[in-house]
Image (cartoon, rainbow, N blue to C red):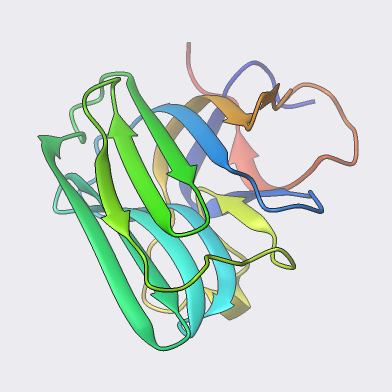
Length: 168
């Protein structure tokens, strides 16, 4: 049992075990970290999606069949305050929404498809994590499409490693 929130110390992850590609991911989190990995899906840089904290800002990177697409928010999020990230993925567009503000949208030339890959929150299995430090901070809520992930339920919907309860 994890609790109502999950804490990361830079070496942990939550892997969501789902069989379909989510269209919308919402994460409520806080961090004071300057650089870390928040969300990743995909096994290599050929086809991968990552959302990182980069110099205190959210940065989305998408590698799709050799093409690179990127989005960066201007707002600093490493202030220890609660922030809500919503990631919307449609066939040929991807949008990043921070704290309910206007979305930042990127058009993609090809259909986004990561159906066979797990979605990692806060880090990734070390064999796939090269040069990307894991998340340090707390995650209070994860919603995938319309389903809220229950951190306290020991079921097959998620796999965890090196996470701790947050100090509430």
